[in-house]
Length: 256
Ligand SMILES: [Zn+2]
Ligand SMILES: [Zn+2]
Image (cartoon, rainbow, N blue to C red; front, side, top):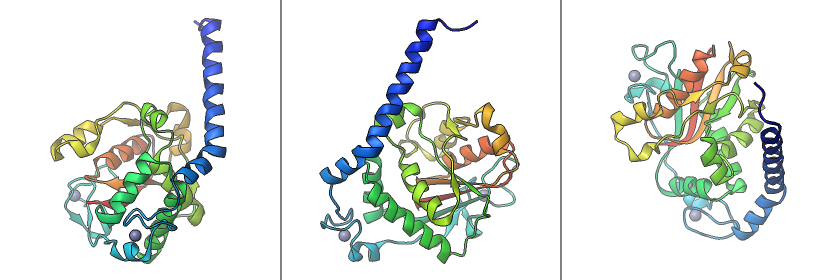
């Protein structure tokens, strides 16, 4: 049965409107926001820079990486063989301790569309990935961890994507935001106890049927701003692997 013609045209005009607004925001909104919210260091509020040297020097690198499944220390962030199943995340790397200036920067990223700051943070990620000697295959596809459409619409952007785009550009890797969807709204992980987090996000992500061919046998890197337990990233990996993905790694700017 085909939908009522009026419903169709309503849908179409709504989509056109959405695209129109998005284009305007992309073209003008960011420069307007950058004007309202000028260059300022998230660590100390000093004006004229997105990160002052003092605050940059204060950032703490994570020395150890957790296993995405059990949360215990894992060498180079590679999921323990005993924790690994057909559908788990293969490797998880978080760069900075989630505290101080980085924590503030991430808060800014979530509530203000500060693309200039996102670019700086993405460059820090690139530098650190190089420093750690991590190499991605040239065909690796970067996926920003998706927000539920409603939250993305409320916020107007996805902070994971703000990081993933310049990160991918620097490394010459493709970034795709259409291969993975958040299928239901979930409670923010931070409000939940450790054992509730896995349950909260289990099955919350899916590869659209029309995209499964583009996922099969490919390698992926999930990018997000912060990782608390790895449960969200593991749930993303689960969806990608069920659609036939080969390797799924994850990289976050900060972690606990
Ligand atoms: Zn500062
Ligand atoms: Zn483990």
